[in-house]
Length: 172
Image (cartoon, rainbow, N blue to C red; front, side, top):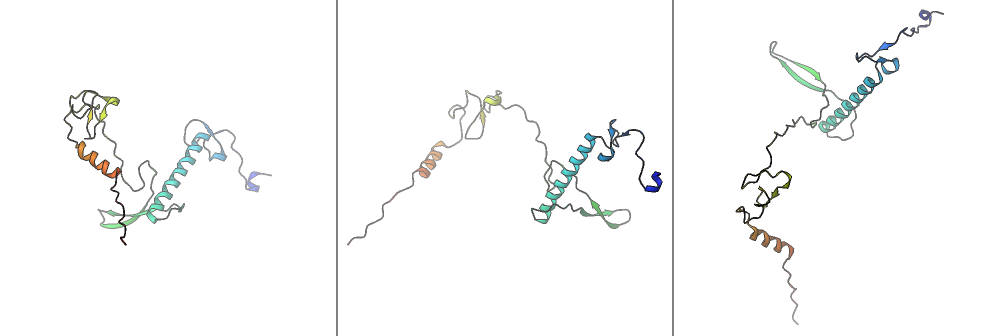
């Protein structure tokens, strides 16, 4: 019997290269991709579905929606002055699902003592006034600390020791 009569296709005579052109051989079971490219593709699809479901749950207000729904946006064509609705798919990213941009914190210089500007690194001392000091300026009398320790201590004592009064007895 010929393959034309049965409707089956003949297997290819030689090995098939990966469709991603990575140089390895693919197979029909992995959609003509090598095993590494196939795993990467499955991982990307899983991440996209997870991101889409989380975005869908945020938008819809439900926490159990696993269905990917494309976002419809109105894009204005300036040349034709017409509004054309187009489907935009949301790509997964490490940023939050609300579209907020995560800005990288600019690299700051080394930590220095507020009084003498000496580098302190990990050995710096944070004062209650909010400043960072070296070992010689860590005490409040050495750096003219503006923090009011007296009122802070009074508030701590007042919280720790509430006023206790005995109930008045009814006289007969």
